[in-house]
Image (cartoon, rainbow, N blue to C red):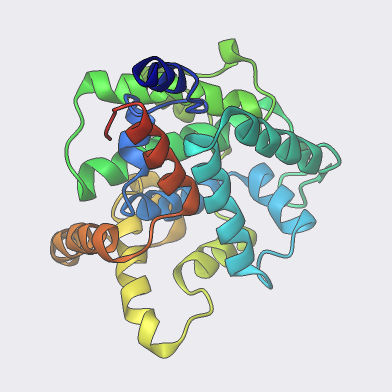
Length: 277
C-alpha cells in the first residue's frame, strides 16, 4: 500500500514547463547565469524600438532593483515553478504588454510591446546570453545540449504570446533570428542610459567592486558589434582575469547564498520522485 501510494505521488508531481532532466533546470540552478541576464539587458537596449518601449512606459531608473528582481523572479518561476504558476506569470506579462505602444523618437517608427519581432528579440538574446554565461563561467555545453535548451525555451516564449512555430528551436535558428535584427541596432542616448544603469546601479560602496566585476564579465560576452556601438574597449587581459573570478564567485554563491524558494520547491519535488538535478 505504502509503495503504491509513493508511486502515485511520484506520478502526480507537477514539474512545470520543464523538469529535473531538462537542460533548463541544469542551467538555471547556477547563480552565474546572472551574468547572462546582465549581458542580455545590454544587448537588448541597442534595439531602438525595444528600449523605447521600456524608456517610455516604465520607471526602471527609479526602481532599478525592483525591476531587476521582478525579471529574475519571472525567469525562475517560469523555469522551476508549477505549470499554473508559470502560466499565471505569462498572463501577467501579456496584460502588461498589451497597452504598451507608441512612436520611437529616434527612428520615427511605431512600436508595440507585444509585437512578435520585439518579443523574439528579447527571447532570443536572453536565451543566447544564458547559454554563453553558462559556457564561460560554469562549464562547457555540447551542441546537443545547446539545441536542447533552445528547444525547451520555446515553452517559455509561448507564455508571452508567441506561437511555438514562430520561435527558434535550435541554436543555429536562434542565432539566425538575432542576425536578422542587426540592421536595426544602433546606439541611442536611451541605450547609453540603460547601459549605465546596468553597470552602475545604486549600491553601497562595499558592493560596487563585486558588481563592477559582474558587469565586466557581462561585457566580455557581448558580440563585437555591440561593443563597438557602445564605444567600449575590449581588455583581453582584464577579461582573462575576470573569468576565473566570476566562475569562482558563482560556485561560492551556489554554496553560500540561500536558493530561491521556487528552486528549493523544485528540488523537493524532484527528491519525492527520486530524481536529482
